[in-house]
Length: 256
Image (spheres, rainbow, N blue to C red):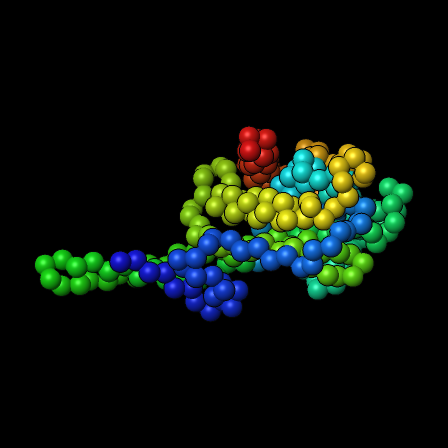
């Protein structure tokens, strides 16, 4: 018998070990008249290079560009210093990006994703020769979220949450492929719940973004975290590995 206990993490405790890996919560059911979807950089609950926050956000940009008939504004077009603030407009220049496109400054939805690590202890028990032996193993569990909220009111339109155990990753590739797969699934579920509430296809025109340009990863940074170009001046080998990781990640996006 195998039993997993999630410890010291209120969000993680919301999941039953035998229950679903993801949960979806929708707020309201009426039509939405927002004119664009703004995607915030991904927020990790631990230290990660800036380019990985942009990579995770690019999953949402690509998926929304394919699914929604709304302009999609990626995080390379604005700045946000507090991406997880309850007030989605706090520390954000997304309204200026809307105005630059000739759109009403607050008539947009915000899609933001984040993840946090929680401790998990695995208890394994086996009966041998009439005696029961047990063992304890520590493993890493990640709880991930994708939330879509209205900028003007702050109302959460939809939120998808999930958790997954993580391994050691692939050398030279995605260090957390389990989180990547979970995040993409949460984005897909959130967009599927959102789409019926948006204007009919054709009414809003085609999406304004389908993919973040590759060169954006060179210059994009977050407060306190260097851009890939800055990294290259300090550690060319690490920068080359990061570029290879970005290329592999983007290739996996196109294969979905």
